[in-house]
Image (cartoon, rainbow, N blue to C red; front, side, top):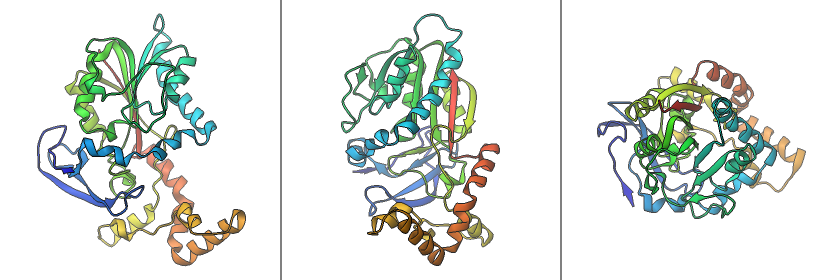
Length: 324
């Protein structure tokens, strides 16, 4: 069932369609519209699947990502933990953390090893069972806790997935102790990756934030924004097909999802019976013949990424907020 909604931040209904795209991960025949509120600039999917329908968009294999490349995952957890260490050094006693969207529980386990007392929130029935620390199997705003009891609350790539972000900011403000930190990572709607290159994971991503809309959420709930970090240290959102976007702009044309070439190595290899070096060579030759611009695009992505990070226009941003 699909539902049409007003803006979650300002409550207005006036919006414009920014683009349309299918669910490229699981249901390619289902198309969705990414819209922008004309009043405050918040991005969101509208219409969208109702909350009761969302489990089908999160099958078991969605959570298998957390079991791939353990070294890379551990590196990510260390970076995430660094945000907590910054303010925990001067604090006394054992610190208490609540991790929203803890998935299979790996980041909270990392923080246990760092000396934190941890709890998690995870609503998906397809994530792995967790029995080594407390996990609430209900949406964060519905938790039967309503007093300040946490020193930090984290939400790594979570708020873009939820149906009511405002309720998450309100609940975090109630549950944090005075001086506690709310640390969260979201995609950046001002980046071309989010706004123009169709890289949001729709319909799992339901909201698209900017620094301005995040500040509005925080201010309305009594938070102080301490910093906003634009980088690829935790997650990346590489501006694939950036060259096609700029060519379309030069032609004063709107880039549509269907205009982009499928340059995915995974897509090519899924249809090939060869392996290893031969497969990679065949892929590059095929790409050169069918989409010569794609090779230039791919070769220059690292440079474009660095420029985006320096200009604070990268597709991923981590916010650190404090409850005064």
